[in-house]
Image (cartoon, rainbow, N blue to C red; front, side, top):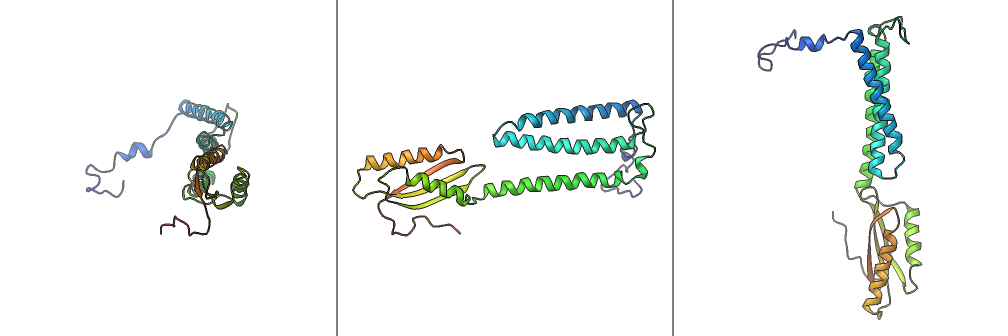
Length: 222
């Protein structure tokens, strides 16, 4: 307000005065605290409820509710420090204006926010960029493929990579060259259905070949 700028604020900055001097009386403070406590309690109940589900989207809601519970609780504690309740449950002998809580509280909330959502971003980035599945899961797929049908002569390729919260699987198997088309199709289709029954697999693709000495048909795009 002490530095006017008529280009950005043609009528001056006096309208910032009510914002800068916003204060509440004791009754308004109690209403504010009651609302914050109620919202935090509801968020906590929703967090517990959403954690009961295995769906990734619902569990993301649980994480969001947990974040709100933590930040609201910290903000509520800082607000308690600011008040002097003579007849209430808390009676602080000093004012928050002269304590370090008001200074470090927002920074603590900001650091918690940054760290929490940074971890979330990293987790989601790994799930979107097509990162390979762990070796144990690839070994599980290989075992299922090899024991799927006695006519499978060779497993050429087994891939599984992230695409969202689940995996896409790509499989190349070798069947006898003289096998009838309908039989080869049935083997490939049933194998696809078996792989897609795994809870980790979103979609499976099965490619059938009669030999495995050729170069890969699909090259990686640069």
